[in-house]
Image (cartoon, rainbow, N blue to C red):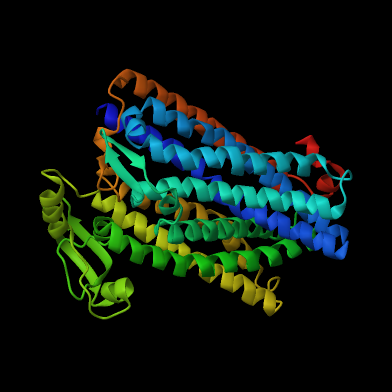
Length: 455
């Protein structure tokens, strides 16, 4: 074990911790804004109570997201200083815009929203939460613009051992962002939908609190979860097709495709010899991978061995194969969780449409457990996105091993890794405690009586 591995572990752990909160913030901000909009339209107090109840959980999640996200940028200058020197001219611009524009927008109007109850008109108060939702999702957009450069570099020139920006518009219109951002946005909607669905199902299952309140929440959440799940699958498919064009090694690793095939079969299950780069046992559906990649029963999908030889000619000697087992199973867990969410959201809508939710009350524990599915999909999706790009930190331009700080010692990174892991673990415990306390530990009457500013 060396400094590079520890630095990678630290960034991986802190990023995954942080990304527990991000999709829920993106999706739940819109969900709360929709509820308050309905309150403004109808004047029905039950929508105000819905807004306050789910808004309180949004605030807890938002606060945890901010706390865990602060560390991310510091790591660039500490553990990854050579990377920061190399890419800072480009990477810093979208991150600066995110902080100065999007984050200030959402944080400012979040304060207005928290303290504006009974002080602002209904319309102005609803406008505040919509500005929070817009700011949150703009924040994600700018961060993904920065990340897209790492996946598919554009708008740059190499000068004096650094990449320098030559076309800011090219950075904004990076082809990677047009599939990556909608995929993250749809994932956020699905995450929020299943979050509300799971909590509502639990309260209905345990007959805790106002049952009419949680029946209404369940109906809204089922629709929201279905919309997110319906969107995330075709958008994810489009993103996969883009990856095949720009990072073919990532897709080859995700399919454990050792040799190029035309047409290529889709792996249902592969047990492979990663060191020997060959199958030991595999079940594949003939032609299906080519069809998914190109919309045609013919079309070559490049394999790991052929790409390795190509990259050696292009970039020089080295190992250009990412961890295949991690990429393969991350891809399947992500896709499997996505289809499971679609099936469960559709089942919830069907039960509601037929007015048979109470008759099939035994499904409520299933919907409660489904709350964890989007977290599985989100985490494994990011593992595939980042680990599948290895050994590159900026694809085709800089290897991860060349980005680590040369002056940070093994002991320093080990200490910070242990400290942040323990700290983030404590924050997760605190977050779960608060979410449980305010979602399943109280009746809805507590929300009605307690002002939002008390959080």
